[in-house]
Structures are given as structure tokens and as C-alpha cells.
Length: 343
Length: 294
Image: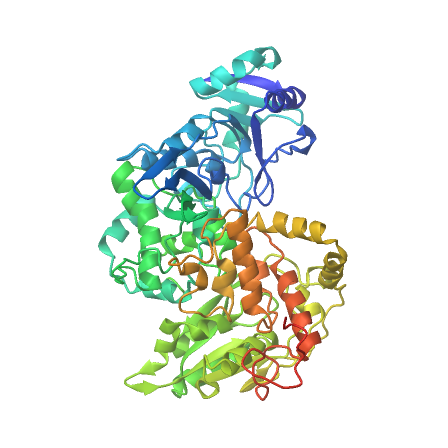
């Protein structure tokens, strides 16, 4: 791996150039990842809490048209969409966020290649930033990641002192991105950044994901689900702030009798009508079944299908849950028969 | 606290109630709802400035109502409620969603709660509903606990903001709400936590015909937030839960409070304040203000 040193001032020059070339530069704020208009807004704080909402809407928008249609007496005409393919550079992504696009990629290229997702994902350039924050809801170390994980980043920043960052070039894409700016880079030494990353405070692993995987396989009918099912209020806060939840719904919007568009909208598995069939039958008719689905999907089904956990351990869902359901607490206690989920 | 635990335990042991809906501490500055059916589990119960959830929302849930049915007999449900949560319970009783005889209200002398989990309890972090609260002692209860304490003083910045928005010219006001509603991700957490959003099937879930677009674009977000404001006008009791849980930080309580002020100005009615007065939408008085009719 290639490691360089870059000063903050030079890094900001690169950012300015990115914006000046008409590309989108994203950076995390307290509430959301936002589009940087002025580089003086960039904070790059390793100790910040993950933003309330993840950046996934920039690659998988909360609503987008997939086609337009026109109806005439005997015919329907379909009109394709031009997918917005602007380059997006995401600066200072938390390690838990940096890997999210890679995790979602499996689903969007499973039996069908989703051109909407892929085109945007390919245009994403992720500059990760080491994280030195953790609170009671963080659990990246329990889901095969860490605050210094470079997974998913094309370039990775580690602050070595107040004015300088160690810049690791992780992927070919990263190399290509940084090559025009090689004048700003000074040679670095991996030993220095290693000293920093090794000493970063990390959340202690709360659970063993393979144990959780086993438990879920054997406890589909566990009475524990009822406890959390009683508590959960069926909103989709958890799914919509999540950086890897990817369910969507297709719906048609008519402008008039003859024209309309087909939309692809975020959907959440905790909604009662998420699995409601046209017949009226609902296989997940009660909340406990829906919550079971959420945990199983994240820690078992996705692992079965794609070999990855559908969770990055950012803790957003738990931090923001209206009734303070903590997914870390739930999966950590699953093997403990003394503890019910809700207690 | 011991009094609360003792009382709840007694209720369950004597079989007077089937379950106690209460709060338990999860960390120093955060609590979460807990539904207790076994007497020994009552030891987890707490009541403090971090009991933010309005537990009345659980009373209309079918699965919670079912807890009250055991061996073909019907039992009461006990609920720990802040005085402001009692307003929601009253509104639910008035709207015939729950039966007063089936609810055992354990309430408290309340001196306010924090605006969100994780904050220290003081005037700066006081929940905005507590600043103008006129019911530190609950209006209705079956058991009253807790000492009377003074509420920290704070400025009513929410009301100032409402006045400010009222003074905005139309286009500026529209722009303000447009930018706020643009943030909406349609997770419906506001609907989920609202005790008065108890419809079995929300109008947004009705897709044939589709009155409210499910898409989270400008029109869809406007439609949702405006319809919610209308459906809660004269019904919202002002618990402020929607505002607290919104992941996009949309100031929903400004809208609800404005509508409450309007309803009060027009009909001298505030929801959830009396078991004797019928609901605003469900009653007619020939002296009612008819300026609203065209």
C-alpha cells in the first residue's frame, strides 16, 4: 500500500478543485452528509458522532423516477430516464459509512444489475477518515470493521498532526483521482500512521457475529421476538437512517389521465403493509415478525447470500429509535436466555 | 422510586392489572419504554427527567390491548404517565379509543423533562412543552407519586419562532416550509410515536386512489406533512414527541402548536384537558365561530 503525507491546506486545494470542476463534494455534518459549497465549511473531525442520516441517498435516492409513460387509446409509450452521472467525492467518510456502498452493491447486482445504483456507485469516490469517536451505540468492531478500517475507501486519511494527514492510496480509483495532484503529496512512512491507528480507542466487541448467525438460524420461533415486537412502533426511522438498508417500493404517479411516471421509493420492513399481499394476506402480520425479519436480514440472510453482514455498526438506528430499541443490545443478548430482549 | 415499584408490584400481585407500561433506565441520561407483566420485573421501573416517551401511544395498539385479555377475562392496564401524557390519555378516552375503567393511571408531580436524551436537565435544555406547561400536577390519575419541585425557568423560543413565521410574507413562509419539508425522508416516525395517530390504516397507506403520494419528493412531503397537521388540528395535545423523534429535525411542534393556538382562539378548546368536554371535531355548538365556512 502506498502512503503519502498531505497538508490540510493542500487537501483543501484539492477539494476546491473538485468543486470548481463541477463535481459534487460531500462531507458529514451533524444531521446529514451535505454538499460542500465553500471549502471553509469542511470540518474533518475524527471525533464527531456519525451524522443522524447516512449518505446513502446520494447513491440510492429516497425517491427517483425509473421511467416516464404516455398512454394513448391503444398504446403505452415508455420513455427512459437519463441517470444523473455527476462525479461525487465524499470527503471524510466515517469508516462505518465508507463501506456501505460496497455492501449494498451485492444486492443491486444480484439477479439483476440495477443501472441506477451502479452508475452512481461507479461515480463515487470515497475518501475515508479515521474515527476516534465512539459512544454506547457504536459497534463497528463487532461487525468485522473498526474505526481505522480502510474497507470501502478509495483514499484514507489519518491525521498525523494538526496540519498534516497521512494519505493512504487504497484502490486504483483512488490512485487515478490523486495522480493529478501528486505535487501536493510528500512521501510518508507507514510506521507513523500505524502508531496512530494502533492507539485509537476502539469500542470493545459486543458480540460475535458468527454466534449471532447461529442463534438466528435456530431461534426463528423464539419467544424473545415478542418482547421487542411489543415495544417497536413500526416506523422506518431505523431503515431510513441506515447506511445499508436498501428496500424499495415501486409506485406509479399519474400526472394526468395520459401521462405519468414510475417511481422507486425507499421502503421499510417495519411498516405493517410492507409485506401485505393483494389478496389481503400478510405473512408478517405482527410487529414481532417484522422485527425478527430486520435482525435476520442483517445478520443471517445477507451473510448466507453474499457473505457480508448487512450492518456497518454505526449505531444510527439505535441512537435515533423513538423507543430506544438498541440493536446492539438485542444481538448481544440473544444467546443469553436470562435476558429477554425488552428487559 | 421505591414507591412506584411498590405500587406497580402490588397491582400485578393482586391481579388488578395485567401489565404495567413504564420506563426503565438504559443509560445515565436515557430511558426507554418497558412493558411489564411479572411482579418481580417491576424493579426496573423509574421515573425522572429522562422519561421522554409518551407511553399513551401503546394503549391503542392491538397487541397491548390483548395483554389485558387473560382467560376470557378483561383486566386493566397500568400506565406511568407524565401530566402531559395524561392529556393524550384523556383525548383517547374522549375519542372512544380506550375505556377509562380499563386504564390505571400512575402519574407524577412533574417539574419538566429534557428536550432530548443525553442532555443535562436545566433551563437551557428544558423540553419546549415544559416551558409553558400549566399542569405540573396531573388532571386525572389513579395514583399520584413524586414530590412537587420547581420547574427551571426558560425562554419560550418556540412561540417567538411561531410569531416570526406568522409575520413572514406568504412566499417567504412557503419557502420556509418547503425547505423544512424537503428534509423529510418519510420514515413516519412522527406518525408512529403520536398517540393520536391511531388509525388502523393511515390515509398515506391508501394507494387506490392515491391521495397522498408515497414518494418523498417536494409534493409528496408537503402532502404528508400538511395532511398530518390538519388531522391533528384541535386534537394534538402538544406532547412534542413527533418533534423529538424526527431524524430530519423538522420542527413539527411549531406546526402543531400553531394549530392548537388557532383552535383555542376560534373555539376556546384545547385537546385532552377535560373528560367532561366533548371533542372539538365531534361536537357542535350553534355559537361556534363560522368564519371558516365559505
